[in-house]
Amino acid sequence: MKKKIKSVLRKLGFHIEAGPGMSIDLVCGMELDPVHTKLHVEHKGEVYYFCNTVCKNHFVNDPQKYAG
Image (cartoon, rainbow, N blue to C red):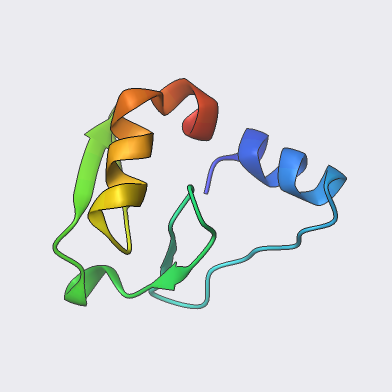
């Protein structure tokens, strides 16, 4: 997860960290296993994973809001 989103989440009281080999859905904060998730988007050279199409669509419509 990018440093910017981590710092924003910390300011809001969230302390989200992905476990080993896991990823975080930047829209809803759900922890995901990238191996078992089919929903992903590449943005600025990084791959982001999503728990459902709603989260993926939110990200695609405004990636700067979530990935900075």
